[in-house]
Image 1 (cartoon, rainbow, N blue to C red):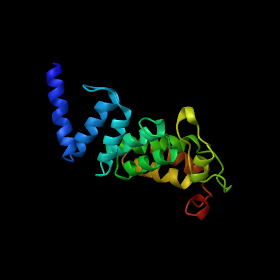
Image 2 (image 1 turned 135 degrees about the vertical axis):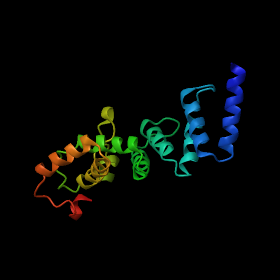
Image 3 (image 1 turned 90 degrees about the vertical axis):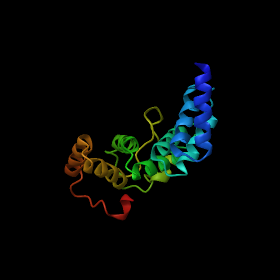
Image 4 (image 1 turned 45 degrees about the horizontal axis):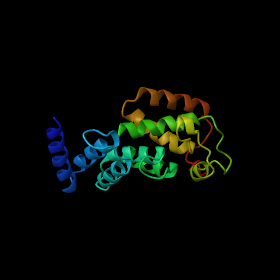
Length: 178
C-alpha cells in the first residue's frame, strides 16, 4: 500500500511539475492534509499559488483560506479577501458564499462615516476574528448577494429582499457606498 501511495504521489508530482493546475491543487491538498505525504503547510501554499496563477478558482479559494488562517503564509485578511473575490468572480460558489457570510454580518452598520471603508476595516483590525472577516461596504455586499441570487441561491434572494425594504431610500450607486 505504501508503494502505491509513493507511486501515486510521484505521478501527481510529475503532473504538477508539468503545469497541470488540477494536479497542483490536488498535491496542495495532499500537503495540507498530510495525505500520502508528510504534512507541510508551506508546500501546500506554494502548490496552491501555482494553480492560482493559471486561474484555477478552487485553488484561489484555497489560497484565500491560507491567507485568512495564516497557514503556510503570513496571515493577511486583505489578501484573503482579494483571493476570495477572484474565485467568486469566476463563479466559484464556495467563495461567493464566504463573501456573502462576511457581508451579512455587518448588514446593519451605518456606512455613512468615511471610516467604514474596506481598507480601513482591515487595516485597523475591525474584523470579527472568531467569526471570520468583516463586511466592507453595502454596495460590495449587494454585488455578491445579487450574483448568488441570480444563480438561484434562495438565502441570497431573501437577504436582498430584506435589505431592499430596510434601505429603500438609499442610492447604492452613490459614491459613498464604494
